[in-house]
Image (cartoon, rainbow over the protein chains, first blue to last red):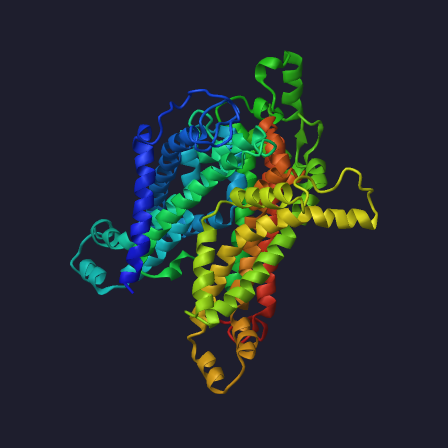
Length: 270
Length: 327
C-alpha cells in the first residue's frame, strides 16, 4: 500500500514545485513584462501561447504572475486558519467554563452560510488582500477546530497524559508540550487541504468581483475575462486556463496530503 | 432526542448571531453609520438630508432603542429600506428568491439523491473497480472550482453546440403563463442546475460512501449476506435505514451549500436571482439590501436544518418508540 502512494506524492510535489517556481521567479517562464502591451485579443500562437487579453497583455504572463498572489493568499490564510483552529479546538476540548463557549462557537460557525457572510463582510470592511486573508481564515477554521477537538479529547484519555497529571504538571504545560506535538498528523493534513479550500474560497470571491484588483489572482483573471466579453471573442483559453491552474494546484496539495494521511477516508468534509 | 433539540437550538443561535451581526456591523465599523445604512457618501448629502436620515434611521436614539427598531423591522417583514433602489428590502428579495430556489432546489434534490444511491452502492461494494474509479474521479472533480464547471458547460453546450441557451431564465419572446413558457423555463434551467449539481455532488458522494463503507463492515450486513439475500435487498432494506439519519442531516446542510453555489451560477448564467441581487447590492454599496440577503439566506438555511432535524426525530425509531428517552 505504501508504494502505491509514492506516485501521487511525486506527481503532487512536481506540480507544486512548478507552481512555487512560477510564484518565486516568474521571469523564468515568460519573456514579457506584466504590463507589456501587444495587439489586443490576438489568438493563441507561438508568440503568445494563450493569446492576449482586452488590454493587450499576454495571458500566459498574467497567469504566471497570478500564481504568486494565489499561493500567497491560499497559504497565508491557511496558516492563520490552522493557528485559529488549533487554539479554538484545544480550548473547546478543555474542562473549564470556556470549553462549552468555544464548543458553541464551533457549532454556530459550522452552520453560517460562509460565502454570503464573507461577501457581505468584505464589502463592509473593503476587500484588500490583507482583509481577504483575515476574513477567509476567520471563516474557515471550523473544520480544523472540530478535528483538533476530537483528537485532543482522544489524547486526553491516553495514559501518558494521566501520567503527566499525576506528576503534577500544570494543564498549561501538558497542552503545550504533550498534546499539541501529538496533533501534528491532523494539522499537516488539514493544513494542506485547508490551502485548497482557502484558494477555492478566494478564487470564488475574486470571480464574483470581490477580489483585490491591485494584486490579481487567477480568480480575478477569470472575472476580467468574463466581464470583458471573452465569450464573444471566443477566447476560451483565457477563460479556462486560470480555472485549470486552480484545479491543478488543488490537486497537487491533495496528492501530498494523501501521502500524509495514509488513508483516503478522511477527505469527506470539504 | 436531546441531540436533535440541541441541533435546532444551535441553528437558532446561529440565526441570532447573524441578526446581531447585521445590526452591529454598520454601527461598529469606523465611518458614519448613516453612510452605511443609506449607501450614500456623507459628502453628497445636504445637512437637511442628513438630519432626515438620522431621524428616519433612529440613529439619534440609544443603542438599545435602535436594536428594538431593528428587531421590529425584521418582525414586520420589511427587513429595512433600500435607499438606493427606493424599495422595501423584503419586496426586492421576494421578487428574486424564487429564481434562486428554482435553481437550488432541483440541484439539492439531484445531488443528494445521486450521491445517496451512488455512494451507497460504492460503499457496499467497497474496493471494487467501480468504487475505486468513481471515488478517485469524484475526488478530482472536488478540486474543480464551480465557475470552471459552469464556464466549460456554457462553452460546450451553448457556444460550440447551441443546444442550450447561455443566459437568463426565459427567452425574451416567451409569453408568460403558457405551456411553452414553462418548457422554455425548463430548457433554460438545465445548465445552471447541472452546474450546481456537478459541483456539489462530489462531497455528497464521498460523505455517503464513507458512511456506507463503515456500515458495510457491521455484523448485520454480514448476516444478511450469509442468509443469501440479494444485494439490492441488503442495500435498500438494511443499509439505507441505517444511513438515513446522516443522509437527512446532509440534505439540510446542502441547502446552504447550494445557495452559496448559486451565487456563482447566477453570475455565470445571468440569472436574475438573489445572488445577482447581492452582486448588484455590493457594486452599488447598498448595505441594507446586502444585510437583508444575508438575513434571508440564513433564515432559509436555519429553516432547512430545523426541518431536517424534525424529520430525523420523526423517523428515528429510538426516539419514536421512546426506548432510550431517558438517556
